Figure 1 (tube, rainbow, N blue to C red):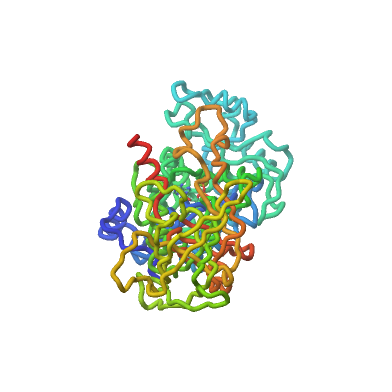
Figure 2 (figure 1 turned 135 degrees about the vertical axis):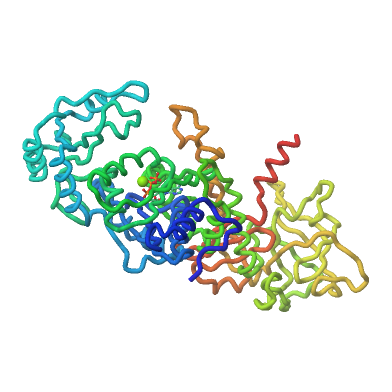
Length: 562
Ligand code: ATP
Ligand code: MG
């Protein structure tokens, strides 16, 4: 398996590992890990972290662990654990026998907490959450010591044991590290190590009623697993001194933490809290809604693991926060599918065309190329007959300048078929809407060329009405109307910026008959339209993955010109 595309130049983490291998810092070992909290489905930002951690292990002959950071029993569920494992595998990575849970370390962490109490480095505090906030100080003002800070070691040991035994109510006490309430880094101001929470955990059940905080768990979990390079996102940079403090006070194996910039993408959100809100509030149809930036959503939409990995390789790894344009992801999807998706003819908004000089009751089969990018994909037959459908957009009664498609009196090429000329337009007498075109065809142009050398400027797609199958097609657009959700004004709900046309459903689309056999999850290029995937949940539904060109960029360019 070689899931990562070779990247053109080394990024700073590759440089660090190369140097570590040269100096033999870790005895030649490279052990990374991907540490999700099972409180939601993975998104494309996690994919960046997965590709990075598993990719580095593959690249440097190391290993990568999968570890669930499951310290928060109230928000975590087995459903998320299962979905995360499924998504990591689907992306093409393998943790072998290195599947771990932070909850497996609860016993170990408890012993370490006792060790810190015995060293006089931790104490039981009775301040409430509000009081603790008040005592904490601010970025500019130092905090003040808790009145419980000088409890004796014996009293702390006794109270902590009784916390564990369930004698106290939720929130009534905490165990805190005794560091420095005036420390410039707020994370170092006697942070909470343990909280009381009478809650059932998805793996340890009711065995515990005190739970370690993420900060007291994360670094030591890395240490237990002998992680060499503990790679995380930039917001943990100012937690690093605390992780270092715990590890050094405990005198245990010390991994190196390295921070990189998290992925942000335009027109979407990347926080699990918000994604959960969109799901539970029914703003989308679930975690796997094809508009979601989740791996599950992208999979259902038809994106391939190869495209997602290529995207992650392309955006690289850096120390500067930024926002990546959604078009970069869409281009990765197009590049991937261009090579592998068979071309088919599909009419999304049908307009009936009658070829008046084509014999009634007759039909024939024309040869069509499956993929001009790959001759090995061969050819197929598509049926042609007297009554066809073309795209409504491919006809204008009053064509603007430069419109090369069908119009009264104009001739166009039907892809793989004949030249046709529009002779007559039939309208609905009530609405004035064009409902039918009468055309003639030139039998000498079979296959798409005129023996007399006559040229036409437009080629349009079509299907034979009597042979086509009906299907539902779902057109997806960006989930949000604005590019950068950070621009939402303070106090305003980001959900006000959901794109009302992010899903447009077309009910009676007409597809070439071969698509009746398309299996769930298979992908096609609908010629001139975009890439589509057969929905894997609902039958006879096609999801648009991406249009052929970046139409938004075009529109935006147009607007700028004006
Ligand atoms: P969220 O902020 O969406 O809730 P999280 O950071 O709390 O995400 P975790 O389950 O803790 O989610 O993430 C697991 C790993 O994925 C962490 O190492 C985290 O740094 C990384 N990760 C999460 N979001 C991103 C992102 N947008 N870009 C890159 N890596 C990310
Ligand atoms: Mg996190």
